[in-house]
Amino acid sequence: MSNIESSTEIMRYLSRKYFDNQCFVTREKFKDRGFVIHHLWYIDNDVKRDNYPDGENGRNQYLNDLKPMVELMPFRFMLLKNGIHTRIDHFRTGLARMKKENQLRLFLAVMMTKKPERIIKKKHCKRHRK
Image 1 (tube, rainbow, N blue to C red):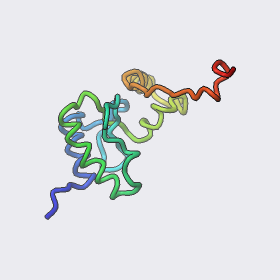
Image 2 (tube, one colour):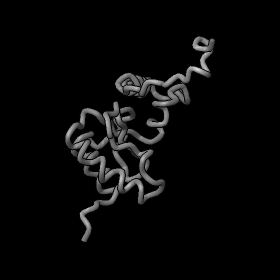
Image 3 (cartoon, rainbow, N blue to C red):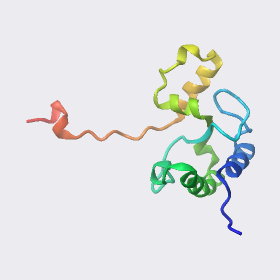
């Protein structure tokens, strides 16, 4: 038998052990579908979902590789509902419909997330043209 766990088993385990079994923003109890682990910041050679194939097989590989990192440094991660996770990158979308206390926790999550620096290509930036 393989020692690779299913993505659902890993998410259940991590949510209970490290994230109080609830979304950081909405405080909704963890469910087997619709939740993600959010990186607050990335380190060199970090496990990123973009580096894995799409679909359930890629998700299983990703979460099996991510699990030891969460266990080692749980303070680098948050458990979020997928809809909330989407709002971290596009946090204006739907804010008027959110409860005020959820808005505050979302803003806190956004503030805690270190965004990668943007690389400005000189040929596209008017300041750098000669």
